[in-house]
View 1 (cartoon, helix red, strand yellow):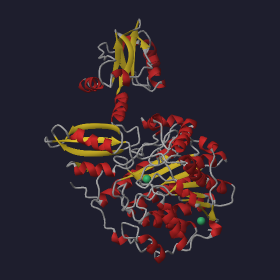
View 2: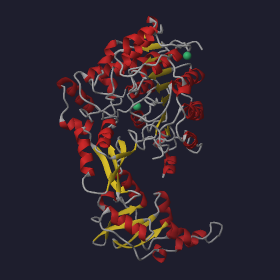
View 3: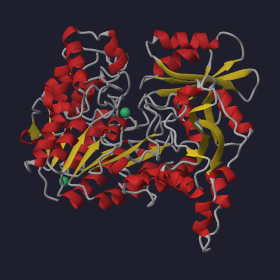
View 4: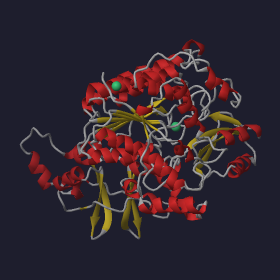
Length: 214
Length: 394
Ligand SMILES: [Zn+2]
Ligand SMILES: [Zn+2]
């Protein structure tokens, strides 16, 4: 998945000379947490709901609205913005956000803001990756770490004329094994499970018979 | 509890048939009707034939192009590649069979006929074993379901100004019905099912609660695999009376898929007939208490059609007509079908629950299910329907 596939293109932005009161209103009305700051159409900074809250005086004080109305976004925005390109990959976005502990990445092309990726977008991408947007049955299969098992298993699925919603392979606790997690577009995977077992692989889930301790 | 029940059936309903290799075998209906008959519970005055539905009925919930594709596939006997791609017709789960549109129309008509008899006051309880195809959505067949008879019936009841509570106890999540009424605060959908972590269709988490004005009007209770009667009954009691009392339905529509039985080959729940009898009784009583007995019930899943389906559904009918004292299976029925069945047929109508031993970790399973029900019934979420509340889901 490219960043451009998951980014949000409908952008809510603010100009750097606008007030933080305005920024607070934008964030509230649009239920968002980050505002890219623009100057002459170029991305020059970012403010988060946290930055705004940090500079907002207590609501109990009289100067409350004075400060909000007389402080510009420019004075509090972060100038160093970590950005990403639309042709970067989902993994790059995840890694950047994780390493820098940030909740949002503006997406720029030639310094122009073209989109934004937030934690919510990454979670949505995760949902899509696991294939859980389409009806299906999920199998978890433990296979030896060598070439071949995935091909054998997908062949069994193919011979049963069932299509695959999603499939991923992840490390097992033991390094000699891998786990294949596969979502199949069928209500009845019994035949496929049986053939996978006959081919010598261990189907961990769904369990049958209730003996949960493997 | 005076009542005026009716059973919808004609043998033509057996024509909804995906072929001999398919798990959704029409024998399930035949075996059930025969059993009811031989137990003396098939009084002719209670029997009512379905009126076939018409295309316009389907169009209340289904896409026209999809309906046309089903028609065409049923005429030619095969699905165009794009119909398989877009509509899931002609897959292993939903194979094309000759006349499938008409067979499905009759089945939908069964449930719809029931809805009409209830709305017009001609009957209070109606049962259609052949209905309950809860997976079909607007423009897709899914999980053996071509048209969603339940949604067509609910849509009719809505058009008569009724508030509908839909209760689904099939082992699979009642996804089709849920999605078709996800925004509608006049239809409360409640589904008890095996968790979708591994089981089809994969949806039905407690966090699916409806959207827009319908937020709060979808309830899901995903149960752990190997859940047994005791836990199911406990969770049913925690959820159903409270939710229905708050909602105040004009009619209850219920789906009684019995694929959660220990013997069922598709799902991994461990119910006996006791879980199903208890659910039927609870729904029956609630219908009298809350909506003058207006109760439309259907069959649904259930793939051990020798040992499970006929008995569970007979018990459902017996509950409906208040003949709750069934003990032995009729000898004639056992003789007739015993020689065809690949497994020994039970000799009692109800399972001996003692014969089903507790599953490993059953205490833990019970606790987990209890927490799930508590989460589902959290008053913060229950029956709201205020669009701004959808933000809570974030
Ligand atoms: Zn009654
Ligand atoms: Zn089912």
